[in-house]
Image (cartoon, rainbow over all chains, first blue to last red; front, top):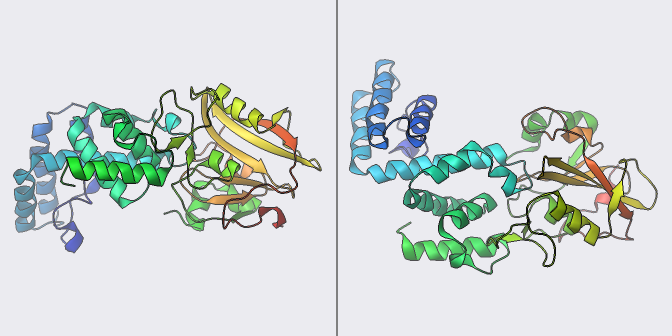
Length: 167
Length: 167
């Protein structure tokens, strides 16, 4: 989520990542309604303003951006979870073993659409057998059927994604 | 992307026991593919075909010990008791956690081992202990061993260094 934070690429300070991650996790696990996640993130931003990490104007800019598109929040949360899943299981030679990780189950517990969009965005960053397995789990094999190489399947999924979603 | 130094943090015993990074970071193939000399595909059994994953036809497809045992036996390996260097013999060290496959390393002619470490690099390491331990990234538990008569030249992926001459 921090990577996706509005204007985070042009030097605007980002909120404290640990607290953002905690809010994300609670939202994903259903411990808080996802619709309230933005409000909670507002609280995180308030703390950042109080301790001087963010100015009030920067806090307002971030909140305005989030309010415009709740779907973007879900997608950003999913992308963050995908990265986390890959990072924590990167040593494994088997995706079947990696599927035991909590992050994978958190992804499956979310609505499909933002996870699929996030998975396609992740594939645009580069090859990921993890994401190929995740997409297969959510969509089935059809969009990339018959592709047995990672580059071939990646291209097939991205072609499909460009037809299905504005990624 | 993990650098050599980062790998040494994740696998603390790598540097002290002797190792050499022999390929770039690459998410396209796994340790089983590396064993097969295939740097285009991620070799993993699956009960249903998953685009991007490859497993030879005719072998068991449940992602458990039986499938991997069948694959290695199809390459003429058979079970043995240890990873000691024997002239003219090529050995594998294979890690499972329960039924879940974790990693396979192949012994080189000079007694070193070659591993594709998950998403990371191919690494030649002097000992198996170099990648073993209780750390989050290390492989735990005793590996099982298999062996076969060493081929005159093991097929290596395009551009791979001649791993057999490392000292």
